[in-house]
Length: 392
Image: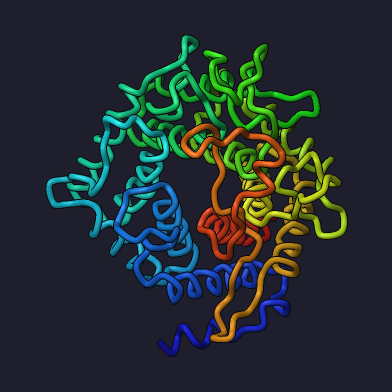
C-alpha cells in the first residue's frame, strides 16, 4: 500500500513534460483506478461480471503500462482479470457468439498481448473463439461488418475499434494476406459512407436506410459524435502500426487518418486544446468539452507520429491536448486519488429507449467521472508521448 500512497500524492500539475513525467502521470492514473476499482471488471459500473469492451480495454492499458515500466503490479492486475473470465478450457465468461456483437471481441487484443508475456493454452482457445465470430459476422452488401446482430445493416465508427483492431492484431499474430485486405476494406467502406464535407465522419451508417435516425438519402446518422470519431482514429493508428508496410491499401488508411486529424484540429477549442461532445458544433448551447474524445485524439496523434504515419509537427498538438486534460479535466480527490471529469457515460443509435443521434440527444447523455473509455486512452496517450519524447 505504501507504493500506492507514494504515487497518489504527487501534485500532477507539477509533472514535467518529459518521458518520465508522462509515465509518472500514467502511473498516477493507473494507481487511482486500481484503488477505485480493485476488481477490474467493475470499472464501467457493472454490478455483475461481464465480458465487455471497456474492462478489456483497461486490461490492455495495464499491459502496455507494464511494458513501459516493467512493474509487475500492472501485469498482475490484467492477469487477475483474465483469470476471472477465461476458464481453463478457454471458455469466456458471459460471452455469447450468437449475439454477433463487435464490442465483445475487442478483448482479443489484450489476450494476444497477454499471451505474448504469459502464454496459456486457454488464452489461445479464447482468441480463436473470438476470431471465429469475425469469420461468421453478418456483413453489408459491400462486405462491412454489422455492428451487432440487433443492429442489422449498420456500421458504426465504434466497431472499427472494438472489432477491426482485434482482426488486425490477429492477422499480425497469424498472418493471412486476405485478412489484411478485409481489415482495410472495413475502414474504406465506413469512411466512404460516413465522410462529411468538413472532413469528419458521422457516427453511423444504415445501409438499409430503415432506421429512424438514418438520412433517407445517405443512410447516415445526423451528427459527428466526439467519442465515435475518437474510436475511429484510435483504430486507424492501432491498425497502421500492425499492417504490413507494403500493403496496397496502407496509403489510403494513412490518408483517412491525416484528413480526420486535420479536420479535428480545425474545430479544436483553442483555449484548452480540447474538443466538444459534438466536435463541430462548439458554439451551440449545451455543448461541453468532453474528456474521453480528447484523450483519444491525443493518443491517435502521438502514436501516429511515433509510428511514422503523421508528421512530427503533430507531436506538439498531442502534447497540448495532454496538458489541457491535466489542467482542466483532472481533479484530486479527498483521498489523494485522481479523477478524470466530464466524461460522456455512453451514447449510441437506436435501441430501447430510442437514441436518435441528434445534437440534443448527445449533449443530454449522462456525464460522469472516471469513465474507462477516457481513463484507458489517457494512460495509452501518456505512454505514447513518453515513447515519442525518447525518439531522436
